[in-house]
Length: 156
Image (tube, rainbow, N blue to C red; front, side):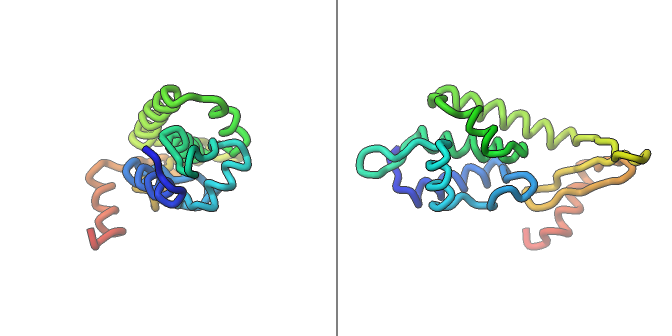
C-alpha cells in the first residue's frame, strides 16, 4: 500500500468509522486531516513518508493505533510512549486487543461513584455521537438502546 497523504487520512477515517473509534473528551477532531498527520509526524507519533512522498502500511497502522488510544482518553505524550518504535506486527496486535477492549467497554458500561454523594453514574455509549448518562446507575436493554437510536437517527 502506497498512498498520498490525503488518501491516507481518508483510509484512517474509514477505519475509525467502521469500528466507531472517536477521540474521547473532544481532545482531537472527529476526523483525521492532512494537517493532523503532519502535526503527529512532528511529535514523532507517525513515521515520515517513504519514496515519492507516499505513505504505507506502517503509517496507517500508527494512525489507527493513535486514534484508538485517543478513544481511551490517553494524551499524545502517553500515546507516543506506547507506540514509539513499534513494528507493523506489534501495531496490528495492539489494534486487535484495543478493539476487543473497546467493544467490551461498550457492552459493559463503566460505573463510577460521583465524589461527595451517593449517586452512582452509568455511562452507556449509544453510538459514536451520543452517550446516555444515568444518575441512578440504571442500564439500558438492547431494545431500549435501539429505540433511542431510532429517535436520534430517524433517517436510518
